[in-house]
Image 1 (cartoon, rainbow, N blue to C red):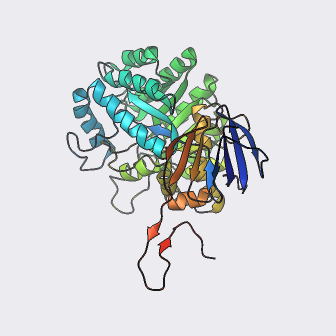
Image 2 (spheres, helix red, strand yellow):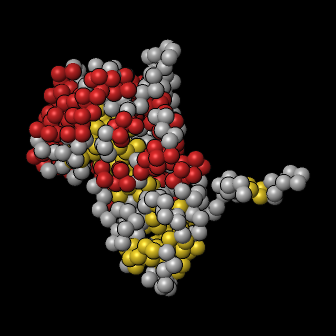
Image 3 (cartoon, helix red, strand yellow):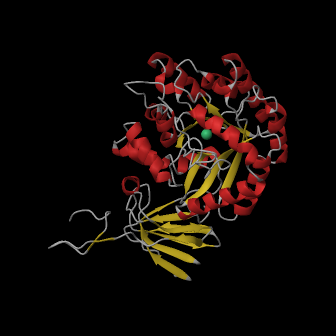
Length: 425
Ligand SMILES: [Zn+2]
């Protein structure tokens, strides 16, 4: 074999397991593996996970925070206005350089698959062309899936309709939308219908920014589910954000969740982003503005978590660490039950892998040898500590490495070094 990881813990709770890798694939997963390899790594007590997956991101806007100035109100609408000002000033090379720099950060933290929306309402489609170039440049180490996103409205922007088609013709993977930003509820619903028809005709997936508002009357997700069923797109359509569901009447929400299940709608919540953007028109109490993650999970829907923003006009923070996002989801969604925390870990690994349709993802024999070894010992510890990614492995090759974090103390009668992950004995 090419590589054996010895004695790791797996996300499903198995401990002291060896993973053997040959020709870029996982060839064996078992305890006390009797084999040798060109390289062996002792990972006893460490969690081995398949890579993190970010189901919702904006690579075209990332790392622009402060240009032309910072978002002072913190609202979605000021973010959109800032992006409108910034967009015409961005060059192809600038888009590529920022996206590649961010992908380095992602890889360093074990994030090896990203679904990024890219604005198609830029007249020259410069961002689209740049991100297609980035997708090509990173493909040996990161799966980048691109969504054609009509930021200024598919129907509302004069170039919304033709440019979305052009972006798909150029090779963008997924059909996007923003129904709550169209002029009226009716036009929002019409945009959902037209965009789902395009996806059905072209055989593509759909991922819409949907109902990213505190208005409980914003019910485009209902139309998205109905169109999914009408066109036979079950399992291939994603509703991103869905924050209006937070504020909906419980009776209606219950009916809606049933409809979403029937459509096998993929759900993406973006807790770090929406905790900042939503509830901005509330005094007190202030709504949290995350969609109903535990209820949707309980209903059997495939729920993922996304980052949405890293230092862009909408979000000044985030750093490419999906464990930050899971950590926030646990708090915002009151998901501190152990099973719920394990579900939040799945929502940044296997759930989004399913939403993106990644092939060969996982820790089974025959899967790609794409693995991350963490300093923490299990998924809950990973969320609690957001610890060092000791090894990031892609197709059997170590592509990023980090030292275990230790703190040196100088205290009377106390240990000289501590590891925050070590439990009391
Ligand atoms: Zn977004």
